[in-house]
Length: 397
Image (cartoon, rainbow, N blue to C red; front, side, top):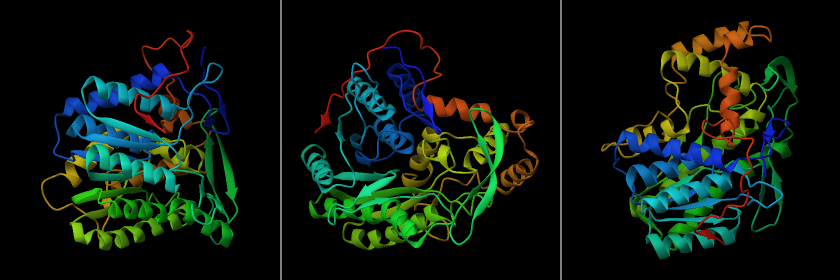
């Protein structure tokens, strides 16, 4: 079939297999071009098919030579419908890994379920023995509690009072004002249940019970803080409450890992274009301004650069892991530099629909959004038919 971008409500509903393959290859080539890293020999990545999770798996495999197990929840393609981007990304990752004799296994299932945890832990035990590194990178809108069978849905809302701010339709380039109503107590609780630390802790428990964590293993989850501009909708909102719970859970997991000398860490990462960030009020405009400033200063990073730096400068630097006063890794250190934030804040005050192109990197935002789905990649003829059905060599179940 011929596959073109199909976008609805800032969500891309299609993905291109050839474009996804090229963007995965580009990340692999970046890592290989930087040279071999110290790092894990075995890694389990929970949420391994897109964004930071995919990049972490690539760095572990192609930077450190690690055998990897990836957990994902993606839709395969059919003759009448393309697969999701994460499916094509994983298929490409496994083909490249196989070509370099890097062991890799993937599980397509709900990471919140007991069944997926059992399957993943079983593969780790059978093929890896134990995991040196566990990366938890789940961004899901809903979670079915495996024990109560209650379905929880997350909300992106402020707490206490409405939040009004500029936002941008990044497709049309139109800036408008948006108001988000405050969350109810139930919506806060649901968001924490979906995006907080409970499921991460359940994964660690399952691995510990099975003896599937190596001595000194790192268990890392990703979070975000952000600037004052987005603070009411993000860090002080429902998502922020979930992130606070995630960080509290890291301290609890650390106590569980003491007996094996392991460490649970939260990495505060940089703001990037993702399927989730594109839908948060005010965030696309902030990212567009941030990209302009950071690219001009020569300090912009994408997912793969961030994950390479996480491994090289923090987790496996050879010394004690550098943490902030709250015990967190700060991969957002360049984003949150005083000079960067001052420039972004000044641009935020001035930007409007008429000067958006001049003051921001809205075009870079659009390009990155499409590339996450395999579109806009050099070397791909998007007018040609492609095979939508692509298998993943080691997919389970």
